[in-house]
Image (cartoon, rainbow, N blue to C red):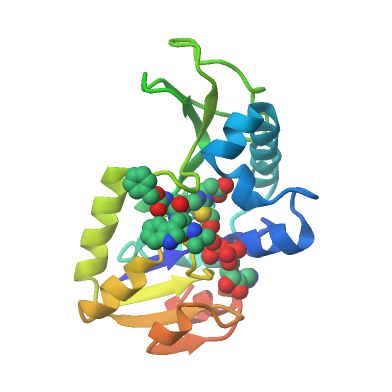
Length: 223
Ligand code: BV8
C-alpha cells in the first residue's frame, strides 16, 4: 500500500495548508505560489527565507497528529508526501519519500552541491553559501523546479506496483506529483481518498472518506 499525502495530512497538527495560506493568508498579503518560486527568491531572498523560517518555527512547535501516527504504525505502507515538514518522520514512519523536499535542510542555490541541516526551532538567517557565495535556500522544490530524480523514480515505481493507494489531504492540483494517482489507477490499484472536501482526486476514487485524516486514518488503518 502507498499513502500519497499533501498539506491536509498535517492540518490537524496546526500546520496551515496551502489553501489556508491563500485564504487565511498564512503569510499575510503574500501569495505562496509566488514566494515558493525561484523568481520569488531571486526578487527578495531575505523575504522568502524569512517566510520559510516562519514555517520552520511553526513545524518545530507542533506535534504529529493521529493520522501521522496511524501511517507510521503500518510498516507495510510506503509514504509518498508532497509535504516538506518532518511530522511523518517524528511519528516514526519508516520510509518517507518527500517529492517536494524538506524544510530540515538548506542547500546552495547555485550548482556547488553544498547543503547543511537546519534546526527547525532555531533556524539561521538568510546567508551565503560558504563554498561558492551563492545564497543558501531551503532544500524544497519550488514551482517551476524539477522534482528530485531519486525521489521521483522511487515514487513512480511504488505507485506502479501498489495494490492500494491511500490519497490523504491533497487537492491533487500540483503536478507532476498529482499524476501519481492516475498512474496507480492505470496500473490496477484501488484508490481510497481521505479528505473533508471534494478534490481533483475524487474522480479517481474507488472509495472516498469525506472526513479529516486524524479521524479517518486511525479507523481505517487501526491504532
Ligand atoms: C515542475 C514545496 C517542471 C514548496 C510545492 C503539468 C506537469 C508538470 C508541471 C506542471 C503541470 N501543470 C502545471 C505545472 C507547474 C506546477 C504546478 O503543478 N502548478 C499547479 C499550481 C497547477 N508544477 C511545478 O512547478 C512542479 N515543477 O513541473 O517542474 C520542470 C521539469 C523539468 C525540469 C525543470 C522544470 C513543482 C511543484 C512543486 C511546488 N512545491 N511545495 C513549499 O511547500 O513551500 S507545492 C505545494 O503544494 C506543497 O507541496 C503542497 O503540499 C502542494 C500541493 O498542495 P496540497 O498538498 O494539495 O495542499 P492544498 O493546501 O492545496 O490542499 C490541502 C487539501 O487538504 C485540501 O484538499 C483540503 O480539503 C484537505 N484537507 C484540509 N484539512 C484536512 C484535509 N484533508 C484531510 N484531513 C484534514 N484535516
